[in-house]
Length: 120
Image (tube, rainbow, N blue to C red; front, top):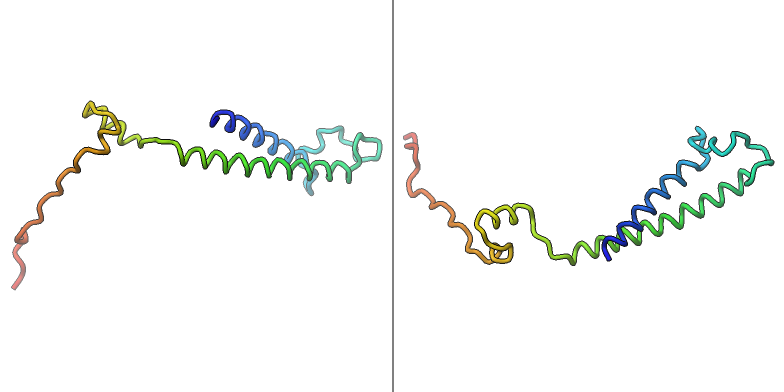
């Protein structure tokens, strides 16, 4: 399930990048790739093309938000262990579940007297 959502998420991200780059800006970005002519003879008029690209961007943004939240939810409910836990478990030849139940290492005892004599 997570892999499917991740693939959809990546497809949305790539599509959104391309659609945003093709939109007409003040500096004209990559929108000149469509033929270079901004006259009325093009497939879309400038205004109609802008409206379509704006709507596509909106739909892709909503899809991006939904897939991002879904991936975050799936990741939060996935039982995972940190890399440090896995390495420590391999060294001790125990499973990560046993590692979590292992007793904690004792903290060093606090010194009763200072190591350096205090000035008088």
